[in-house]
Length: 350
Image 1: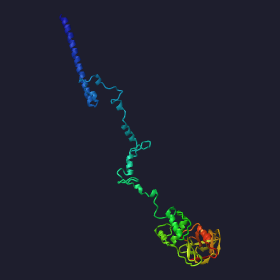
Image 2: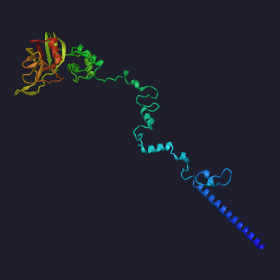
Image 3: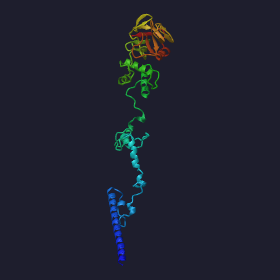
Image 4: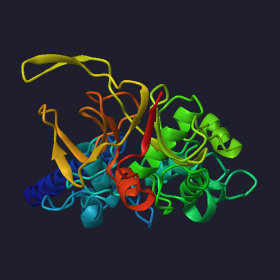
């Protein structure tokens, strides 16, 4: 009996020891889980894993186990980069100040600031073509109907109504000009040079205050002859006057001998135009080459040896010939065809 008791006692004692060991093991397991949760909380893991379950019991095996290693801890949505992050990466590759992507096209960034800089902003700065602070449009002062403002002076090449006014005035005063077309060309320049010479002005062909005043005052040269049809050549002012009975019919720009020495056919000459009272003794109706090989003369009228009044394509506002008197080809045609200066016509050079 005692053996039986003893064996039962032993079995009971062994079961008790087993239970105690199992209890100790369970207590050790709970302590390990608690340390793991503490470490997870201190290292910044997900709060849901560290917090107790809704029932208030300690986290079971599902709460304590980590998520599958193939999935990111933040889930699929948090694993994809946000659009903002992508833009920042693109910006890092782009140039810092040009506001353009790698393909060179404007991405719109900085455009609003550029527009404000150019237009003066919404507060009414001094931007071109914009409105000032009081809302008025500054572009309204650009000129009548958008036409550019004419320069202060009238010069060669201009085409305008005021050129036509000058041409008409020159024609009324007797200066040689045939067209009143508003186009400042060579003929208008010749006439303005003649006006400036008659008025003792600087010979530049520009209509400035003094030239305009000469036009307004009706400046014309005074002839020296008083009767008959006379060609007067004013050497001092480089002008040719077509005079009838003491009245100047036309005033023409001219260029006479320049006073320089030159050689022709082995001889030396002085490029001068002698003064005196002469008459047309010979004339050639057409282009004629100088016998001294000094160039061509258009429809010359000889009045003193080899010296003639003739047409030329080059008649500057200063002495320029070898001794003859140059006028424009058009003016020479007028002398021949309209006014008429046949042989015997008086030529007065002074």
